Amino acid sequence: MAAYDRVLAEPSSLSARQTLAAEWHATHDSRAPLIEKQLRLREHRLANTLWCDEANQLSREINVLVRRHGKLWAGAVAPLVTAFAFHRGCLAEVTLPGSAFPTVMPKLVALAPVQHVNLTAPLELAAVVASPLLARVSSLQIVELGERFGDTEAKLLASSEHARTLRWMSLTANAIGKGGVVALAASPHLAACLYLDLGGNPVNVTPMLDDSMGFVRPLRSDLAEEFEKKYGPRPWLALPEVGAPWPPHRDDASTTA
Image (cartoon, rainbow, N blue to C red; front, top):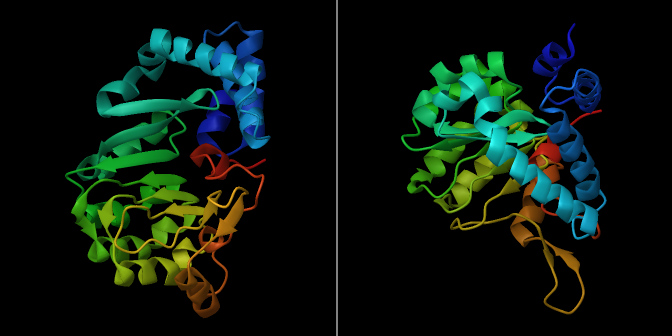
């Protein structure tokens, strides 16, 4: 299997991406600098050293590469989506209306190792969660929809068996109350999700690292503890580890060996 075909088949695999980086370097592919720099920057992110000079330089160089070549590298994906981004050297993140997801996602995963999806209005969430292609998604963002994403929508997402592959989610600035949060916590399909950001909702049980006392301490609500006692361990409700990257980067939460 060619290196890029393997990446398409195993988008989460770090080793597949490293093999691709070696192939692109050997063949002088124009994307070689991007994948090499993004893989190196990932090492800094995991080590919590994004503040260092090398990481800052890598970030600047990556931004220049994407500005200059991003649309060319995106190829046929670009006209299908509202926006796109690169992770570990490949186009892996897309923004599109939820209404387009069932018809556009099959084309996207055939072209690129898309794992990260940002959905906008019109949402048409019922069609999204019914699509088996939701299971190809590792991180999902649906934000700033207010009353258009409340308890009903949270329950719909929580009930989807195709949500079982989600490792990172952002549902901020919506209208999710206790009923919706209960559904998310109780869902067996979301039991392996590592991070779920509920900031800006009427009920927010996302743990945090607090430094208001002059030192960093992990905090979570009594409701989060109550949910874990009732429904069992949920990584997204667990106290974050002091010193580890927090919140976790969506691509890091989605990457396997």
